[in-house]
Image 1 (cartoon, rainbow, N blue to C red):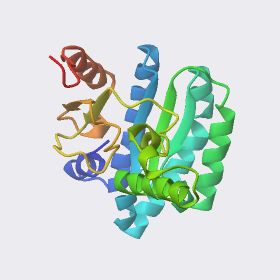
Image 2: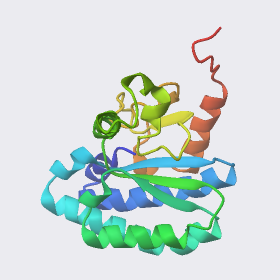
Image 3: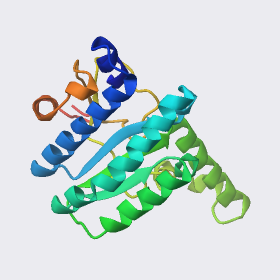
Length: 222
């Protein structure tokens, strides 16, 4: 999800207003994804690199995240959506961690779409953590070096409970991955949408899904 700051700047508004409008896009996309039968939707909400932004902006983002997690419980339950999260969650402010846990618990029994928020997330760190886990197992004599394969590494990623993505959507026309699910998107289809995230709503999301449906996925075959 990219372009909140630019959206606000184009309108002469504070950056936080772009983030607030971005929350409306989240709500619209989550509703739409659930209605059309998407099983898993992962949103890159806050990257590990985002901590380097100005302190006031980061604080405002954390307050906005806490509010979203609190306010959306009823809607998530009404739409049978289970909330999960990946990333270095211990880096989040304690109050956000507590609200995240409450929201996960409140939606834990839902068996519809799984909404995964990537928070304080960086794919290189995720892969590094997985490699360390595997190395520790070797050191402890629990596995041999020859046991390390793609499946073992995948099982030690933050996303071990979720399937790999079929589609990656990048908004605001940016042509880069930005350290997001680098291992998991090996065979995902990429769609770059020109709309800034606050303008990315139901129609734009369905357009990306339609584009995905026109792709011929061969996974290296003919």
